Image (cartoon, rainbow, N blue to C red; front, side):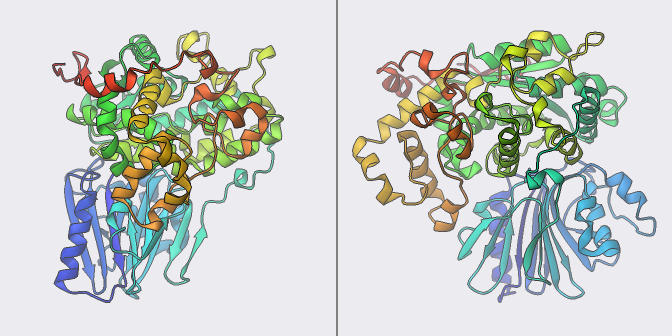
Length: 586
């Protein structure tokens, strides 16, 4: 992932302003440590921090058209760039960068080219001929993007809050699937798939169609000029990604450059479910597996950094971001710059355990639509910023536009969870890859129960976080929470603890409003809580809050020992890795 920052139409075009833009752009340097670029045209500044994945030698940004009248700063990957180049035979490209097509597409098609892009992206395009500009973000919001307004009338665009929060009077998250045009002065949605209307689809389930669509989504993400690997927790989604990648890696350009043996990465507390399952899948697929261990204290020590980088106070996002943040640092230390990950499947297929209680197929489908529309505030934000904090790029094939169209057109009757018929969560996906002749995965992995990432790394991780928060937030603080934090008032000590840290980094009212709120059980939307009366008494985003569904639900768990908190604070073992990782003494 790269970092972009644009200041458009400011009243000050002095050298001092240029220095300030450079200073703010450097706040995004973790996203793109490979090169920095800044272009100024009058009262407009376009800055870029580059993570070089495609054409590292010549693809520095900002990028231009032939006469340099069109300027673009981009964060993302355009997977169909070679196909798009063929549709632009009269254009000369300066670089081999996948993002180089954007300026030329604008020349050829105007503002209506965005839907032609197949990939993940956020970009700002400046047309110096009339000083107009457009801003766009990918369909689901895989890449992060914010928009702000300064008192001098300028518009600011940044990959992260920290690039603009100190200089804008108001700012907000740029909506996914939208385009802003300075000519109209407003936003319009360029991404308009059928599922977005939440109408109930009726296409019969065809396992082979679904399988081919996902294999295609994974294969196109093997486009890279740098070392890469896969995140492998041993759950269904990451295991399928790893299996397909391992099958199709040989013969690709990436394999010729970096070898045909796939590298896989897993993180967890000692003895966690993910570590055990991840190693089993890695052994089955024959990957070079790197296993990273962390302790509860390692995670607690990283919380402030995590909140600074991920820019949220949402409890479930912070729980899951912390192990991913720690793992990303280790992965980058091995020389890897890109990983393929399994985010998005649970939203598309109703994989969260609370979907067991969906009352009918209509409600099931509408909830999946709501979950996909909200991904940019949760799992996409986590995956993007936890990895980008260390200059690592995460690609997510489940959120491929074409694959989503296929998966969301299936009659939701086939997605419903029916235990009496042997249909567990994500049955349609599991069945699509249940191949007896050439198995993708061992059966028990293919049909492993859903574990949310923050649970799978080790159940004591969440329990430890709660105990730690209780040491820093007392009952009196909770009694006054509504007065201190009237917007999205924290309802737990853990939530209060995260909120205090967030407010130190981002004290503006606009910042706190970029974070979602509302009740949730096992990652549900507020609407789905109505599916079970008992859930309203047990509001927690962990999968174990799905009482009567999760095999290790809270109702079956022993209480956290009262001595856990002090033990965590006093005991500070270091992070450890496997022999194939980087050995660090404990």
